[in-house]
Image (cartoon, rainbow, N blue to C red; front, side):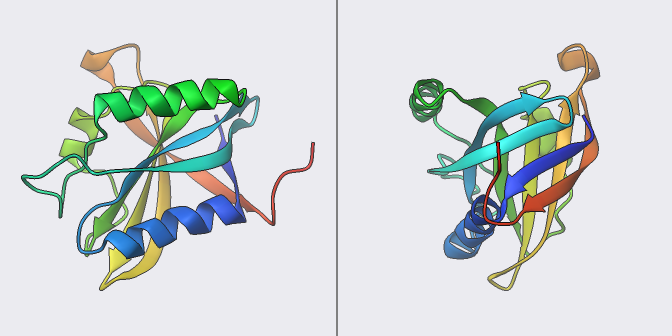
Length: 151
């Protein structure tokens, strides 16, 4: 997979979500379709951060909420392409906790750095590997597509 294709509206919604939840991490799911070039993100679904112990630097989507998101995606003919979250006052790079808690092989993980309440850098990482024992992140380019996609 070479690139994450995302509409400007979805890209900006992800970044805005991070600004709105600052100083806590935001989180959500990315819905899309896989093409030969990579994931094509059609929508972002905001999720509540279920972490109550450390919401400023950790996130978790409740299992029941994730099941609902996945069902709704299927009704739209989409799949879960990955997840997004913010890093308040921290770089848009994955942490050891991000890797440990990532389990959706073949999916993307988008991270936006929020500095003093303002969205800065947004990076994308693909979770690769054959299983839990050798999973790893590979950075992927993000291509923001104007107002949307043409079929």
